[in-house]
Length: 119
Picture 1 (cartoon, rainbow, N blue to C red):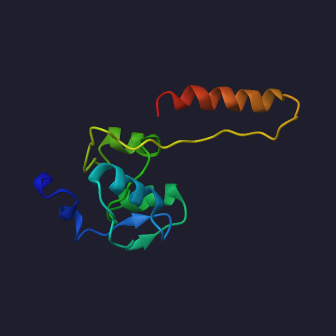
Picture 2: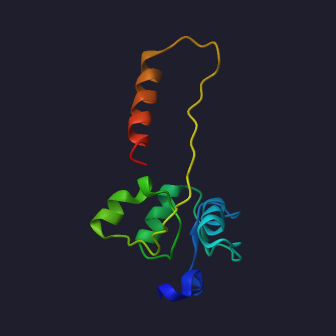
């Protein structure tokens, strides 16, 4: 139940992409104001693999919305918590200085910037 907060997930396996739980720890700290004090039951070293495992019923996870938007929209996954102030996931697009502009790089940058507006 929602009244229990994160304690309601105590018996549910946590699925992550790394043993040090970077996404889940950041989410817990930001949203619940505390430290995540458990380890992963399942570690899959790729976020798409984590998504597949959780969609198949392996447990729960914390994923960026853009990665699981289709599964949320279809009902294959359901959000367990919708925070008023979700954590921000900052990404940087970088290029070595002094490199000449390349049309393919420019196109990828433009696509990422446009897609990022919806993240």
